[in-house]
Image 1 (cartoon, rainbow, N blue to C red):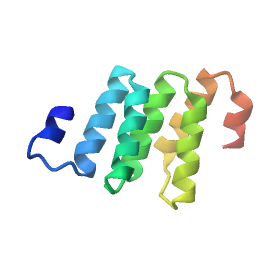
Image 2: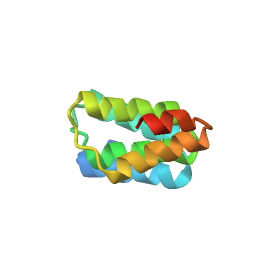
Image 3: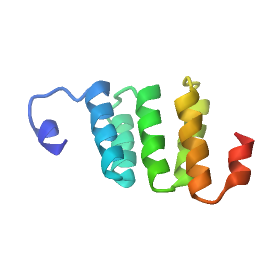
Image 4: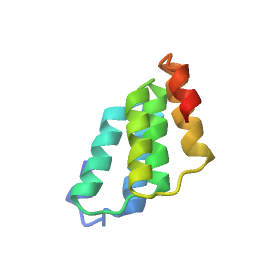
Length: 105
């Protein structure tokens, strides 16, 4: 991704989403969250796909608090949430042993 940033490739929502999805497959949740932050700093619009990928990345490693934080950010920003969003958040809670939190979703 850093190579793309240094080249003439436009870093748009699709490029960031692809990079965040790649982080998901590698279990690199911290890098995924960093990319979400970079998007905000560069004023690149995030969308449901961005957030779902980031939540799923956190879910894969049991980072339930980060997953719920992203879910809350989506709600505050009035971003559409779907079954993928909630499944990933519930799964993150389950992996973190926080089944009570999952029930609140």
